[in-house]
Length: 335
Ligand code: P6P
Image 1 (cartoon, helix red, strand yellow):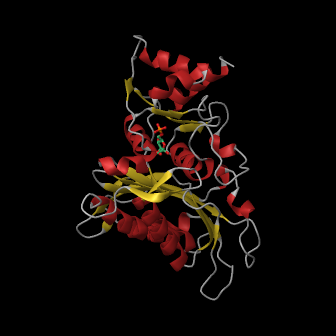
Image 2 (cartoon, protein in one colour):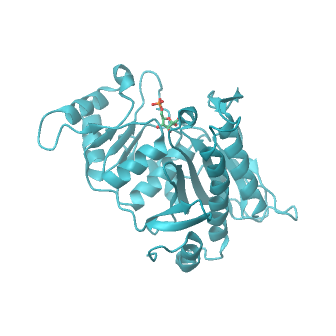
Image 3 (cartoon, helix red, strand yellow):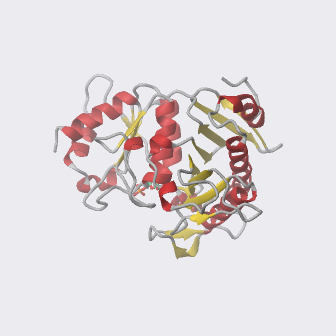
């Protein structure tokens, strides 16, 4: 448990021994992410003032227009991780294939792989709505000393050793877990230091906010349509409030503080949903479960899904435990 107003650096040192592989490498990894987030935050915060808005003119493996800040954030996180000699491989939403990382002496001895969405919600960049970075960390399963392989990245989410997000909002926060609860650190931009502002974050067991893109209603499966009608009925603590800003990190962060459910289901438009399992759903699911919430694909636990592809998509139901369970009831009763 952190001390009030403890800095992130102090927290990492204090909790270093709590981590299974207490060699200090994971601490150095989190510290490198903390640094990269400050650099990206600096650009995000002045995006309106410099020529860094708008599309980069290329598309990523998802076929999505790459915003300039997407590309910039991707480069900053990759360069920072490589320079810290901790990871043997990196996968990113912005990279078609995984990146093999050698140590400065040309070896492949580093123990961790990182998967990330360097700037999630990028469609919000030009309209000044908060965006985020999501990261997921695993210990490699192939022998140290050999080049990293795809199987090191295709591990189920229940094998993650750390996961977190940075939200570039009205303030910049780093929220992460190493399997011992969830803690939130807020950046003081004046001095470039993160302070423990949200110790031991807990997802409310229930809530009154539902978050999804209802513009896709006609394409949704029957179970989702029935759940939406349930949320809108005049009964008990319902109708609920609809809140959706199209930025996964922001929608889930708000719901983790206030209580709520986020749903991005499969539909007749997107057969497996839109969100990627490895660097969006798994890390958010690890965080949400560590805070007492729940995350599934409408039927099975996200963290138990055996990945088959680097950029595979899954339906995503995530948030307050009782709300996810109710949504799952509708999904199961409408097959
Ligand atoms: P839609 C952003 O592109 C993202 O991956 C998530 O951050 C967000 O929740 C979702 O897609 C928004 O998708 O189809 O509602 O615009």
